[in-house]
Length: 64
Image (cartoon, rainbow, N blue to C red; front, side, top):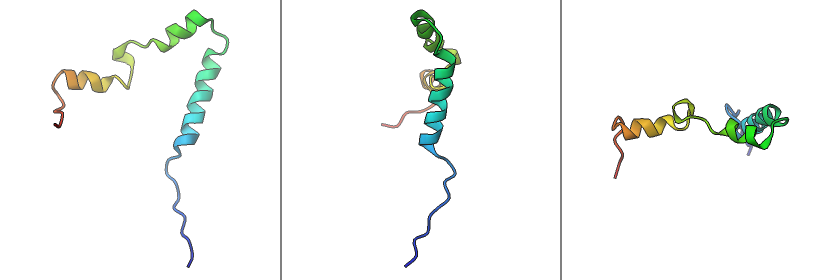
């Protein structure tokens, strides 16, 4: 029986490596203080925290 391989539309590990390389290139010459500031993104600018504001504003109903 022949095995059929599916074409990947998205490669998570490749994306992770690319993002890490981009971040490293941006912070490699920074001081410790500059690196801390780089990673302290205000919540309103952080794409991962946008969900928090939706939940806190009751725009999203949480399931029990």
